[in-house]
Image (cartoon, rainbow, N blue to C red; front, side, top):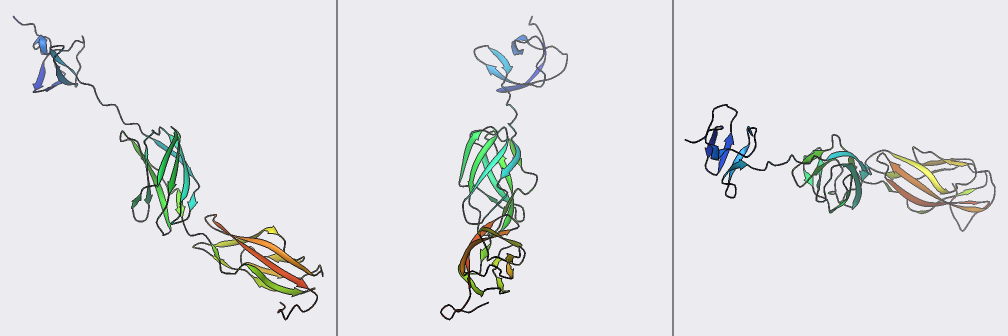
Length: 252
C-alpha cells in the first residue's frame, strides 16, 4: 500500500500545492518536512518528484532624490546629474513633458554608481517642464513627484555690443540696454565699471545718474541679463566720457 503525505493538485508540467490536511502519494511530495503551501511545483527528473520552482525576486525599485541643474535650454545639449538610490548599470531614463505627457529619451546615460547617473539630453525646440522617469532592467521604476527640469529660452540682448553712448562732463544721461526672454529679466554689471556717478537699474536696464569724474575716458563694462530660470547672457558695452566734440559724435 502506498504511503500518503499531502495532496497536490497536479497540472501537467506544473503543480500548485494547497493548504489542506488530506494526504496524497509520497512520490509527489517535496523533500522538505513542512508543506510548501502555495508554491508552484515542477517535475525534477533527477529527483524523480515534483519540487518547488524558483520564484522570481521582486524588482529593484530605484528612488529619485534630485537632479541638477534644474533648468536648461531647448534644442541644445543639457548635461544633467541625477541622484537617488538603487540604480543599476543599465538603468533607463526618460524625460516626460508634464503638459503634453510626451516622453523623450536622452542622448546618453552614464552609470556612475548605484546613487548617481549622468545624462545628456537635448530637448525639443520648445519651452516646457519635465519630470524624470528611471527604470531598472528588472522593471522597477520611479518618476519624480514634481517637475524637476524647466526648459526655456535663454535671454538675448536686443542692444548691440559696442559703444552705447558718448557723454560730456557732468552730463545726466539716460542710456538703455534691453534683453528679452520667456520670463522676467534682471540686469547687473558683472565686470568693468560704468562712468563715475552713473548706475544701472537692475529691473529696466536703464543707466542714469550724473557723471562726476570729469575725465576723458572710455568706460568698458559687461552687463549680464538673467531670467527667472537663472539663464544668462552677457553684453559687452562701452560709454565714452569727453569734454568736447569727437568727430561729430552725438552727446547724450
